[in-house]
Image (cartoon, rainbow, N blue to C red; front, side, top):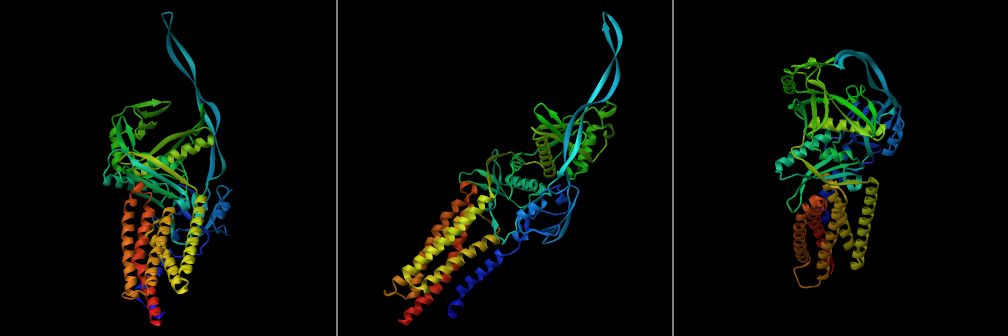
Length: 570
């Protein structure tokens, strides 16, 4: 035993097993881990932040108690915050800090009807039977009257999941979430695709979605794609926000005064300067309800100067007792007019950096209209903050994956893998009828499996169904290689050759040739199916490398030692 454990190749294998254990980092923590923090939410105001991009699962902040009540999983968190009252302070403790979150009131705009705002006399001239007669008439102005009611508290804005037990990053198949495949229109360069990925990354980060995978991909025919994977959420908003080019322009008399991105220095998301416009509210229409939103932005000095230049020669007109410039400022999103606003006379020729953006939304019910309006507002805020995409994208495929189904997949995969290892071990024991030959084979299989998981945690790759399939393939080929080596050593034990060491060396050459064939066969799968089989290919290739460089040599040394000892005893 001493000679085995002090063998260099065995020491190397043990070292990598320990390294894998360090990378996986098993944990027994409890609580609700924070996945996302919605921008502009109560949690955002309390300075809770989303996990940093590509951070390890165990680095995610974990909620451990709410108002002193212990939280052990995500369901307990949801139960603790359900039915919370508005304008209440909640104490939230995590494994990193303690926060006080003040719940925000959830309001509903109720339309009560049209009322008389003012009644004025207006004089005019009219020709009657050839005679000009001076007449007067009463002008009645109607305005929509709305009432804002508090109907509860807004959600805290935290998306949580059960606290992770290790650093393995579960893919969408196991965690649940949304996967979107996008294709650019026309021919695009690699540099352009890189710009697309960067813009989409900033756009999703502006929404509070930091733990997102966005990557370029392609297929064997040369087609290019962008794959976006967001674990833990299922929402239709993501699809629209990804495919929209987001080309925002503000024009005065067809002159562009500012655009989204670099021209906008700050976008307000707080309740005091964004939300449903209290002056317009929500009104009933023939098809349902319509609402207006507003938010303020700070322009760059250069954009403010362009606005001043575009307004300095405009005339001042009076309208309902107020003075405005003769041209409005028009807002376009993807070349579609979304709103037009009057420009106050005081802004003529003035380089104003703070302006108000508005828009609207509609729905069959008042609640759906408010929800759609706020969704449009958040989308426009993200576009203004991050800029437009350099090219137009088309949605090729959207997969919404259930986390419940994913947990069943994981459970079934683990059961299948364990059953396969037990059956293989049983067959090896029946075939050779010696524990000292079967046991090294079983231990080597477990070590190989563990090192592959450690490599996945170290490289921060997603562990999904395709990766599990790759691991099963690796275990199968590993067992096959070990049986080849074992059969060569035992089956030709009494033949005239160079001894146990020579026989195992010959078997290892067969294993090396099989590895080369399998490794090369996996290369096309890195690009096949727009990269959807990448997890399978990478796991299989990494597993093959682990086997040929680490576990197979160690196994060969152990097997050679056992066979030499048997030959000496004979």
